[in-house]
Amino acid sequence: MILKSRRARKWTIVVASLLVVVLAGAYTLLQVAGSRTFQFFGTLVNRVETSEKIVALTFDDGPDPAGTSTILDTLKSRQVPATFFLIGRDIAAHPDLAREIAAAGHEIGNHSFSHDRMIGVTPSWVADEIEATDALIRTTGYTGDIHFRPPNGKKLFALPRYLAAHNRVTITWDVEPDSAGIPGAATIEQDTIGQVRPGSIILLHAMYPAREQTRLALGPVLDGLKQRGYRFVTVSQLLAARR
Ligand SMILES: [Zn+2]
Image (cartoon, rainbow, N blue to C red; front, side, top):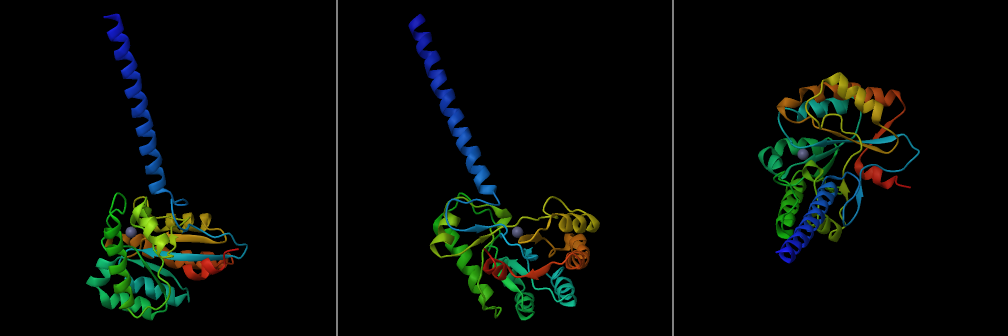
């Protein structure tokens, strides 16, 4: 009896230890999947090191009728170039809006076709998501480099492997004033201006109907950063300025 209970205790300790290791591993993978600054393969850029006061403004999602013309008008009135990470499905639904963005001279990036989570997925699914969206982006007349930004910034194995194999850069961000909930325009303006530093990449969600506050904040953000001596560049121009 004593021998048996000792053996049982030993097994309990082994199983508990294994469980701790598995949970710690799963936790680490979750951290990597959501990291803005690290991935297992290839190049990920969330900002660049530079002493120049340059900043890249990026928009995620869409194109959508609720936001496109307001965003384009605001950018045009301030002569600011931006980078739009568009969703393939939304380009297919609104090809005219995607063409307007390209015709205005902005950079277009790939934000997947479906905007589904790109972790725990197969290599062929990743390839389909990216290649279908690249093809749609090319139908807009856009001819520049197409960088990639994962939906919700999530990536783990298959996605970074594909991007690395195709010499594609993963672009995240270091300033995200409207990612958590829907803050008011004044908060978005203050947070953005307070957090930008030379080489920053700003992420804004201004496309969909619920994002009125971000659209309202856009003009004041551009004006405020210009007043502080910042110059806006596309993501490709920012990458070229890397030291
Ligand atoms: Zn998105």
